Length: 332
Image 1 (cartoon, helix red, strand yellow):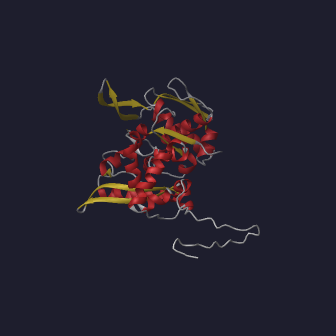
Image 2: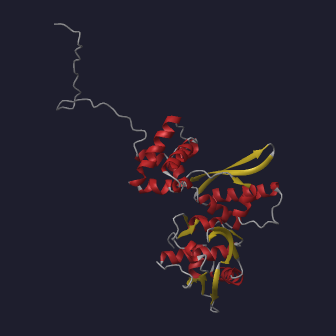
Image 3: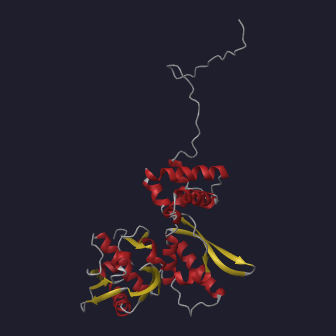
């Protein structure tokens, strides 16, 4: 099966919810295959998912695939999601279900679901701020925590680095229930394990940085590089402060005419603030040699590394013509 693309709004990725691996796979597969078939994802439309397609997506045998789907159908209807929204000018925390209907066939060949009205727009490609990735890249992740972490990191793959994320916030974003992994030491082991799995099985290469206050971990940052970029670019690229500002300006200026550059820079949150804020953010990203290296293919498109050379005049046989230079002070 060809690579299936998943699209989710960043608001949904940042929402609070808990899903097991089977439930997450059911949601993701339904969204990806609907998108491929050109089906508009709305609350009043049921999305059908065959056991065969699900098995092919995640390299499962048919019996195992149906068992996973049937179990997910039994539990997904009760799953809730909490998110922040603005109602009547007030910021409010809302709760809704993932789906308002879910079905399966006794013949063990198909399931169907309809996303709830609050969730459907965030599954469809209807948001200005969204994250995409291929199921192919994450199908070998066996932990729901690793999957949720991957989605968070995929948001920042074009920026090259995440902002600082507080410890409790990272647990929430990974879908860890409050009563689990309460020890920072135990959580760190889980986090490192998830990163190792992401580095081994996905298209991302992730480096973890712990942010400490004295000896206490207060948060984390992650360097995020797409594996294809690693193959195309050196490990590091050191730019001077002047180069950081100069090439940041050139990248931002090129957004209007270069779609590839536009897509990457739009992943910076500052792209929704102002061009000035975006220039500053890009320059700051270029200050990090590892992040700057991931920008090299885009910088080359703008002429980075090309040095102007004086053209040497040649005769019709291709031999260089040596021109005499006469100074102004020379007298005959």
